[in-house]
Image 1 (cartoon, one colour):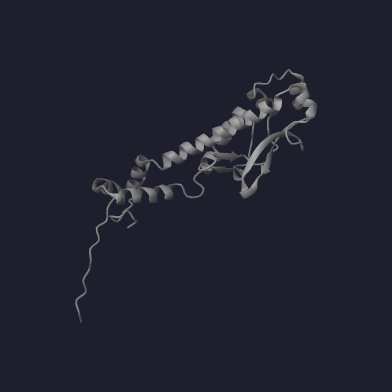
Image 2 (cartoon, helix red, strand yellow):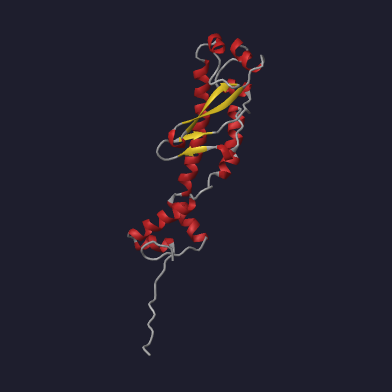
Amino acid sequence: MPEAHTVEVTTYTLAELKELGGRGYDNALDALGQAATEYGWWDDELEGYILEEVQRRWGITFNPKNVTFDLGRGDRLCFGKTSDVDDKVFLKAAGIDLRTRAARAIYEDGGHLVLGVRYYGGGIAHNWVGFYEYEYLPDYIEDMQPGITDKLNDTLREATDFALKVLKDDEESLTSEEYLLEWADISDYWFNEDGSWA
């Protein structure tokens, strides 16, 4: 019977791969970056900091499970449908004097701001701010204060831009070289010379 030969394969930590230089280190970083941003990494931000800040600054309460976003091609975020908008907070954020007739018509005369959702092809969604079942504000409010609809939609855009920035910053942090080196070290990850998982 022939004698079996074993081939010893050298494995490396991420820091060792970095010292080796070459494409293996880049491949390992790519693999770790994908692992760090697998589905659900955004839950903590949406359920915590983003939700709290959007409520505090803009008066919008949303269900984190209804949020859709795209950080790549289109940089879009939609809070999803909600009827929980604090009219006074939202109007103040839009720079609208609460003593105006238009503002009072929204928060005193039975009106209430809501976030609606419009869907486009490919599942792309965006929010609009409106009044009960109406899309946008009814004409009589716009007549009281021309431009109020644009101000409210600009304010909604500020809120979605804020949420997008937090998510983008978080994704950037999770895929940074510094974070991935630390994560690989703490997790005791090993790689082959080509950067594949060992």
